[in-house]
Length: 155
Image 1 (cartoon, one colour):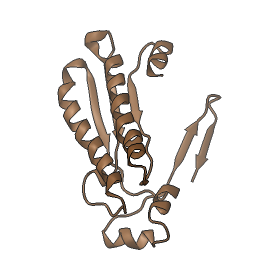
Image 2 (cartoon, rainbow, N blue to C red; image 1 turned 120 degrees about the vertical axis):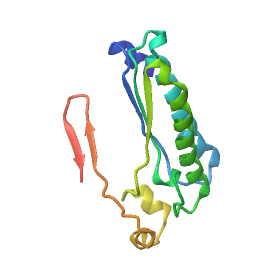
Image 3 (cartoon, rainbow, N blue to C red; image 1 turned 180 degrees about the vertical axis):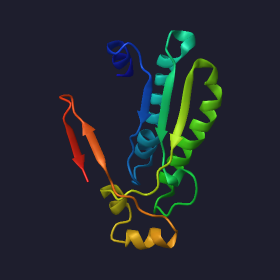
């Protein structure tokens, strides 16, 4: 838990909320993972970082998507709604927590060539769809640092 991490490391100074699933028929699952979990994570992290409660301050970074800013051609508007929710929550909460030493930011990356993106658009020509909208699909780069400090990189 975040509390355990804070206790083991002398506090918590950054949280990157980066979990999500793509469009699904299970709307509640989509909302729970993409939006509700991010809201809870943000609130818990702010509580641990809050300088008025003994925290050292810090930063919370919420990952949304280009789908949270403007029209995005996903087949399911419910996915887009969760990403808009992240942007709206982050904007609103950021104004309310300035005085407790915590900065709150939101990153909205463009489309990234992942299995989730390809599955979302099923058999459609994803590149053609995004090219028609002037959106460049980015390559996926994953770097995992494991407990033994080894690095796994997928390019």
